[in-house]
Length: 268
Length: 268
DNA sequence: GCAAATTTGTTCGTATGTATT
DNA sequence: CAATACATACGAACAAATTTG
Picture (cartoon, helix red, strand yellow):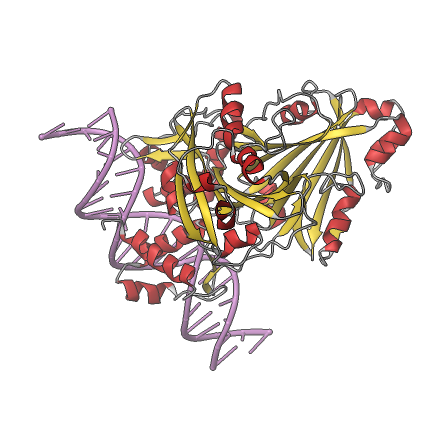
């Protein structure tokens, strides 16, 4: 084969990782050792390691060495409606119960409420024009202490003006905003549409989720627009999830209870 | 600030890209020009460019230069059931119609049928034990001539033995396998569960989708397990989609017709 | 069609800084 | 503090891809 040397080295190491010769968390040789083993210069060895790093197979720790990445036990969020609560997946209280059901420990940051003008993205999701005033309610979520998702919900200001005052308050709406809007304004959520995209994290996201700053690990961005019975958009919820620790499930029709699924191993 | 020089250069260029000073498809200066402009060595400039490449903001073309990436017009697949056809999103014939509805040109590779033993991943998705014999039916899909997704469906061999012979044939089942299984064996698909994950592409995937071999662009892998009325898994469909050109929609409850959505711009 | 010039890709060497043990 | 290991930065040479004359 005529691939460059750094790729050949990377492929050799990759094979060792995927075959299990190099197990999870195990240390690769140091740069010096690999240099000697493959008869390459230090920079070439480093190029090979950078390649593997980009593939998400190894991580380097200054002063320590290079290690095969530990797979994170992913959390699986169900995006379709919970038939019991009628609540969408990942929403409000349903987040807390879904996480604790899996015997994992959920926690959330204090709610952060702001009045803003809708950006293009928000306006498109709410089906309004850019610059319209909206209420944004933002919180960060953790599972077992590690940052897991960031969620921001946007409501047209008009809803608060019409009487849903608590949307403006930086206090949790215990019964959930879906219920609250039904009680306060008789606005009922008839359905929602989730829009799933994947992109590189921005600086704030990489920082919060402790992702490598170079964008190796992508994030899901899920736009959820909720509609009332007339097809009017009443809310946009944008949730950002790091792709290395989150997966999603969608149930359609009649399916057996929950999942015993087990993701395969690392390979192709 | 005390960031390394290559990151400062990268941030400067990034700002120019995100502010629009450097537009889509436009060429950055050559390495030589950037070297002079920033007063750095060639390798340092190259490190900065590599950083931006990892973020998916630029791409380099040997012999030509470095360019701001052109955004691909993404295709949006609806994963929830089509109320008209009763077919799941992205499945069989529904793929062709969904694509042409958007005024884009779908095409598919010849069907490739194999008899295999179920790998761990397949076994888990079909809720059977590893090594059980299954029929795999594989095809590759294109939109407007560019590779868009690869799909493999797995059926327990038992179904063919019980009379669904056409599953073994490398010929399309025009009416769709859902309908065929209903007609041939009176097995009705009562629902399905989609499991969405994101990971780096393997070599074959990167090759087919023409993705950079270093795993910068992730792929979605969607596992769809279809169940009959008794909760028996009758099919597993694994579809791989490059994340740079695919998005998904999930409709729950009553929502307005289709989407006029417009994704925001490039920034954070 | 070919040769030269331009531009990025690969590989080496070397020196110094920073983080961890 | 010293030793070890990775991070950053510079310089240099040649190879490979592309465009230009």
